[in-house]
Image 1: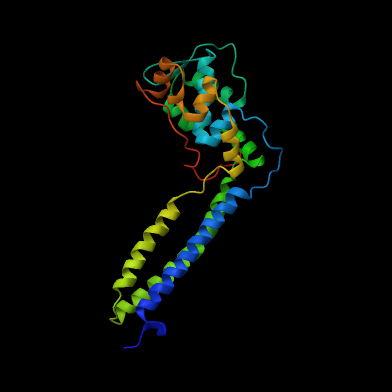
Image 2: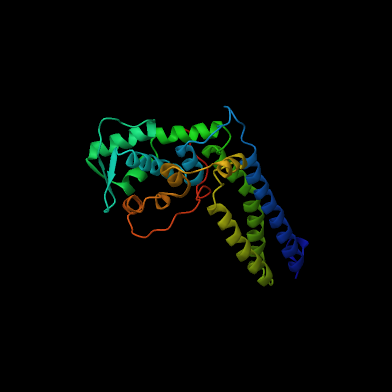
Length: 262
């Protein structure tokens, strides 16, 4: 019985694994390039605002959280233990576009769920402007670029895996042993799926450095760095996070793939 393509089964498995390893190296190289090669179109941000820090550490939803924390601390919004916000002072609509968007939304609904507010306003133009500013400064990866680079990086992985599947089908059809190739395909298929599911970290390396240099002390800055559960006031922390005795949250800046332009 002749070997498929004239290559013995064990030899093909070795070649397949080598090819897949090289494809993985290509994936990582593309992702590193994506995070390091963002060209700055504006001057780098000298000192991150609370909302810019929030965008780098937790993405769009964290930007809204930082704005809410600032408005609550300024006495313009009132947070209740059941996780709702109400307008407490209508004399000012906020000091920046995100805060004004938050105030307008809460005022329009009268009583607004914090969870719903952060979910809805994360996609607002005001939050998009914060992300776009950081993209221009080279601190965030543009979302479209991240998706395009991710697709490019996966091409060799898919190509090698497809060749392996074709060889496996041919081996099965011709009655040749395919145990080793079956195991290799199963393992590499899981790795390929994990890579596909994993997004490119939104922060560039320069953005990560900017986060490392940031000094936080004000309540809104602490929320920007760690979410509602990092607010220093226990009563406000419980109201904003919706639970008692919560511990400070961690950095989640790389949980999302890229950031959209406003």
